[in-house]
Image (cartoon, rainbow, N blue to C red):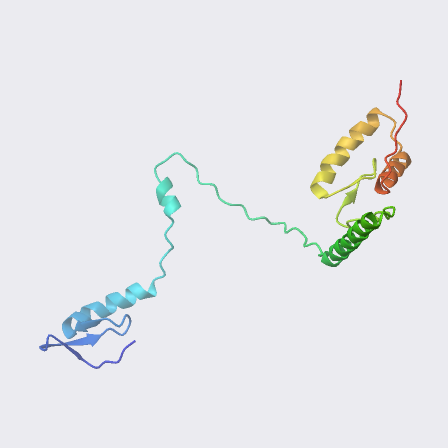
Length: 173
């Protein structure tokens, strides 16, 4: 690190710097220090694991984190679609407030956007994210086996709900 120029400590003893660590020693001490310092600096120290030492001698089993061998596929971002839906929702809300102020009838709501990440249930035609879809489709399958389930009728119900009208089904007696 530093050059080999001597340094006078207390005015009577010359100190020479170590080639490895740069500390200064007297000539006789430097001869002993040199090999030890080289040996020490050549070794890589293992990082200290406090958890391992803390649990040593106890009955607690250390839990190793398992690395996930399967990487989930990265989904393509649909931020542009979300942004356009947001802008359309704001515009329709402005039209509604303007219609209310002027006393006109309310304009029809914007059509709902279909999220491409959602999975459609084949039994009831509703859409869910992946985890909810797996649970729901099993549930819906059981429900459909118990009663007659018409997907066309359900699709018509969903369409009427989207238009703001609630379709009332006749009561069974």
